[in-house]
Image (cartoon, rainbow, N blue to C red; front, side, top):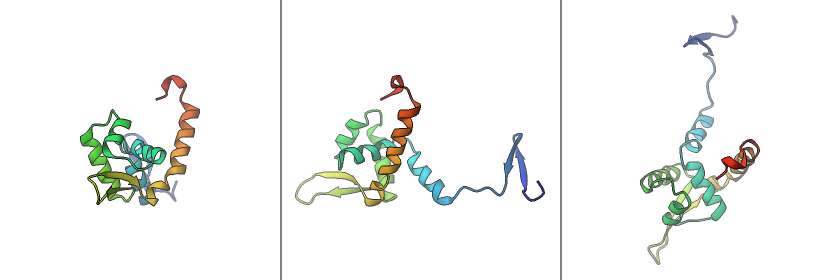
Length: 122
């Protein structure tokens, strides 16, 4: 105990030298935000989507929140907003960085299939 400094907070012993990796923290602040995982999952499964199609696929997410989440994912380089010059068509698609989340999302699907019963499914 002499080598490790311990603090007591609310009757819980905490190692004051423990810190989360900033990259890990940043990743979970993005993926852990409500709706982001579902947005990424839809784009992985169905490819580029128009806003109305994304909204249809994630009906419990309000349009206002979906706009905010898409802007955040775009700012983090996970989603790109593509405007087609020859039309008013705007699509959202995963960047290479976003597409690299495929293995993560597959692992999450496998975990949920294992630990949640069919009565708890979508």
